[in-house]
Figure (spheres, rainbow, N blue to C red):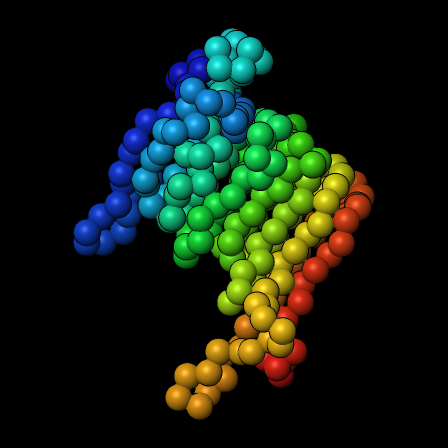
Length: 231
């Protein structure tokens, strides 16, 4: 296997007919970085799957930090419109981001960030507590032995995305706000109407689970649904 892998390139695994392919990389840890030397690199797979096996690496020349796994630019992930699956047998770490957010483009693809993918109880997900993961309505699941998040925002004008957070062997902490609401523009919330039928706008579902640990949300928990859409 690879000792250290920097994912910066451009890959297209889309298919005109049938299912899109999967980009498979094999790090032990995943480090998502905000670095000027790779910030303009993009990739366009419909599905990214970063799965790890126990490899050992050295020092990442972009950050000067020890890395035994994959280095990914934040912009590479943000540009994906299909499914995004990032897995590591140990840790997934998002460095302090210059713009304070990892903002995925709106689209139908779900996002899954899985630390401790080998389920040995060692491997955490961590990010700067002042930063935000923003999915623009896409569903997201984050799991690991322990989770330490900043803010998480899956809200969108139509339907908010679902947020599923699972700590399998420790604490789950959200330092900021967790927002899965449907957003309103203008003075009053007006649901979509098509040929006289009301199309409901709903906030996303929230699932918080911590095994052998506690759950702490320091900010607000917002899951608002358009009241005219309630049944």
